[in-house]
Image 1 (tube, rainbow, N blue to C red):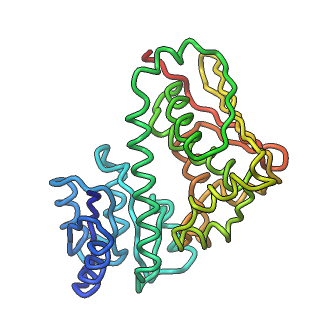
Image 2 (image 1 turned 60 degrees about the vertical axis):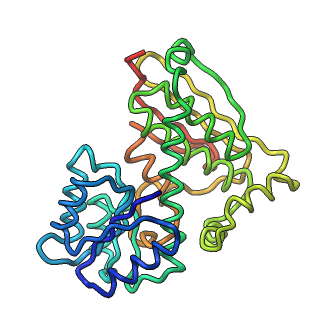
Length: 296
């Protein structure tokens, strides 16, 4: 069961958040400030942290910075709940590594879809690790390969395998997932940013993807990924048959989108998965580079 550490110095908020998350099927651990949370993070395994920004002893950003400096805690996703909504304050949080924000007071209809999306990402990462065994040596013999994909299952299978070509395959695998899912949902299937926001909020995202995959004109579209390496870097070229988009505002996290339920994937891939990431043409071709794996 997913274990969520909830950190808040307000006992009423702590109780309400705890009841909401337990009611949604999660295991919950509680902490009353950043120092209390730090002790618990170092004593028990947690999958996700939901913390208040302003707290005594150690505030939310202070705890987040500690976590990002600890190899064992670095990868745990963190949601910051805050009433600090100025652009500078949000930017400060983004720079500290807070990719997920909720505005106080936190309502269940916003909290639960956001948590569910993050938990799904955690499961994707675990699935990537589980499905990659015994492919690294065979892949190291490949200098280039071309693959087609249409569905989310296609993406999951391909991302898991292709990431094994690279150093830090877990990080590269998550980046490939984000870019390839983007090619399917926004590219080939034409799901807009606004539409995805509503689909995520109403739990219908995968259902809508499945529907569009069976309906013209989307049903005939395919996306492609080419993987090649020159001994130094692996180069992934991902393309789709959609209308394209302007990737500029998605390459980094923007304060204006900090409270959205989605929209972080490209920025996170750019920051954590690849040494270089660039879009070409009308935005339906992306080239990503990552150092080649050396231990095969």
